[in-house]
Length: 98
Image 1 (cartoon, rainbow, N blue to C red):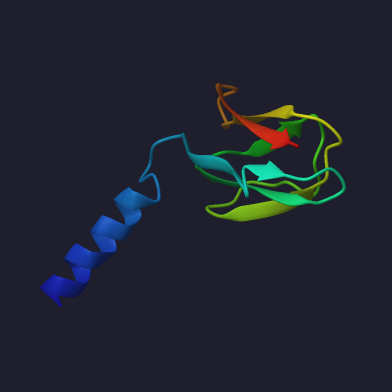
Image 2 (image 1 turned 135 degrees about the vertical axis):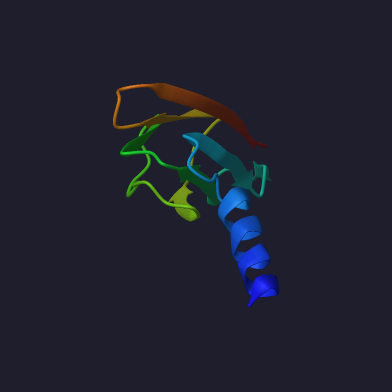
């Protein structure tokens, strides 16, 4: 029972605990050929809303979500997360197109 509780507490902390955080934001792969697609993947904790600019859909608060994108040129995407109190956090990633 104690081991399970310790594992649960570690998992809770790894997923942001009670903190408002952007856990990760990355492109996979980070470089594509023109006409190919990649995934923008993100994770947030304790966010009420998220958005990606330039727009990528569908996005919503999640510990782990990916969306497909197909830019025609190098593009920097910005993830903005908002919590219930109106605080915002941002993270950016650049997807290169060759």
